[in-house]
Length: 207
Ligand code: HEC
Image (tube, rainbow, N blue to C red; front, side, top):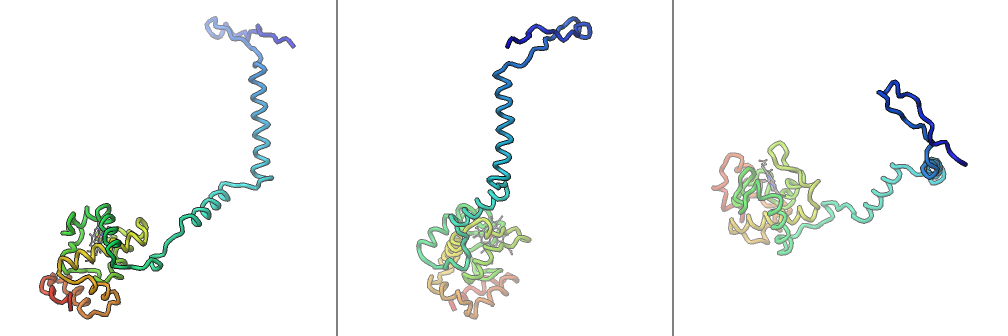
């Protein structure tokens, strides 16, 4: 089949004497074009009707696979423990996320100091974990529960509490015991702190 490759469009008069050929497309180009068209039809039929797939379905499948691979840890599932490992882990978390507001040496800044006995939101491990998890957004303390894992939060709490105990001269095991919240002095701190009587309450922490 010979193709007429010299046909002119014939609009030189409209285009300052510039002519244009009206050549047929090359066969290889047309071939690719029709292959693409056929492939698109085949793909559409396969994707939607034979394979019955959808973006939403793929998303759900990926989320399900991710949930199996990285199970969500419930804070309650991860036990808090005042172990040296937890405290060391907490130091890393603190140095990464917390120091900007609470100070390089926990001396405070935008956020509270952890070296005194002033605890606005409670000093038991439960309360501290709760404060870190839910934050105090209106005061500028982020809810870390959506950013850190339950383990990281427990570690951060262990670190903060350990450093606090160290600064106040309280034995570590007292803090773990205090986790039940039965210590009478805990309540005093919270009230005292609001009025800035923290210093006077110093002796109470140890009971
Ligand atoms: C953007 C600044 C900021 C960062 C970062 C931050 N905090 Fe805070 N944090 C605050 C502020 C402000 C408060 C005081 C909230 C209040 O007064 O109610 C606070 C309060 C707290 C309290 C309660 C103290 C109390 O007296 O009861 C704890 C515990 C705490 N932060 C732990 C952490 C930990 C752990 C991290 C790191 C994971 C962290 N914070 C990161 C700003 C911050």
